Image (cartoon, rainbow, N blue to C red; front, side, top):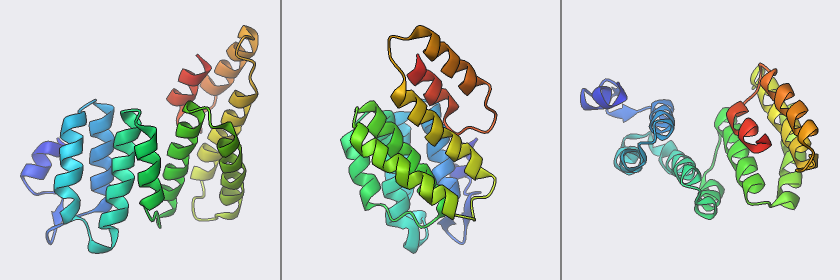
Length: 179
């Protein structure tokens, strides 16, 4: 659907592709495993974003691309370049960083991020109902870090707790980590 819409120029207003459409197209392409197409899209359509958002949205979406490819160092470097002014994109970037730190076993950096992320979520009034989703991923990641990898019963309880939580960003990723 997005490919057809791009061809028909239905996502463009005055020659501009919204940063939200750009980000959603990348997300769907990554979910479908269309990595070559997504990489091409990120590069080709960057110039159609509003001037003030081109570099940050390009870096953010390219970071997401490299995360899916498990090229975490490239993804982290790009996230550092991205000026994520939008609150939800900023939070999404923090979640991406959280996942990379966890997967790289960078637990000191992860603990620091989790601590600052909690404070950010408490102080930020703009994200309203999203706060619960993100606070839950922070809390579950903390539980995951404390989990004894050989304690099957604790893993099972944590899995059930995650499965039973409705307001949770990255539920699938957390379940994958629990095993």
